Image (cartoon, rainbow, N blue to C red; front, side, top):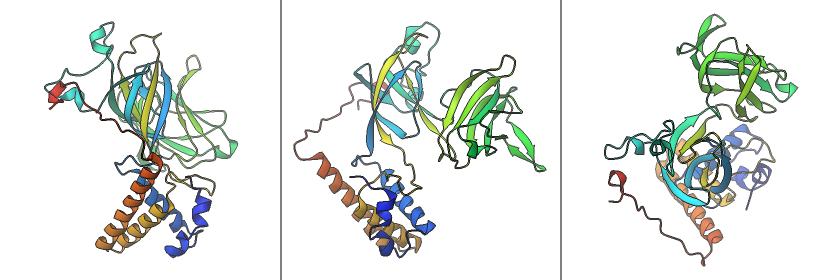
Amino acid sequence: MKLTLAQVKASTLPAAVNMPSCDSRFLSLVNEAVQRLVMRPSAWYDMHYRYQITATDGLVTWPREIASVSTIAKCCQPIVARDMWFEFLETGFGLRETCGDDPACGCWDEALDRGVSPLFTDMSGSYKLKLYCDLAADANDIVIVKGYDANGNWLRTLYSGSYIDGERIAASVAGMQSSNTFSSVTEIVKPVSEGAFRLYEYNPTDASQSLIGTYQWDETVPRYRRTYIGGICGDDDTAQINVIAKREFIQVRNDNDVLMVGNLPAIKAMCFAILKEDKNDQAAALVDEARAFRLMDEEAQHYLGTGVRIPIRMQSETWGAGGI
């Protein structure tokens, strides 16, 4: 079951929490309630989606809808997903990198967590940046790009008499070039806009440019999860990748936006918990929170059914005493 924000506003929830549906506090309360439910480490209904991509490079940057990769298959064969700490086990095999043509370094079938990035792909060198907006309504909106300059120094620029981290770039349909040269980008800060923004690395010498980031209208501090997948070893090598991934929380803003949680009774119970928590009534808040979790469990069981056979996942490898 799915719910739009308009349906939530038309429900009994506004009266139950004693807030008009048009009150900005009501929207904030609903978003916080959904966020708390989404971020629970539980396999509740509609919290995991299946995605398929064709990878042309071992380092994959996932779209913003993905919070974490739960399981992964390469070319129809499941492979092991590791966290970022695995490469640093003293009893393990060390860092996994692609080192030239040595298959022992890069051609292995595992997926390693590589943290987060504000870019879809890393910069290929030291270049200017060029920022585009899709819609003229967003022209002159300011995006702050933080990172390091061509000399590897943290970039700070002067604005209104004070130094700030990064550079302010005004969006333009025709593209606005940065004043400074960047060797890497670490953070993007953008306003809520009407349309998407696109960021390119730009070489003023030959006017060539390459897309390194696309940001949707409601993204403000974009960060994307990354996974390093072994076995994609050459420039012409590709692999079909399938994953089951935990969804990242994305707040609703407009009446036609669909909430990530469609369980209205669970949302209501979590709203009660938040309000009581704000009044420092922790005991009562925990009761409402537990009811919200129970309602989510019941919904998951409702959609899972009683005839599904749930498999057991076993770890067969023992790197770093992992089999113990």
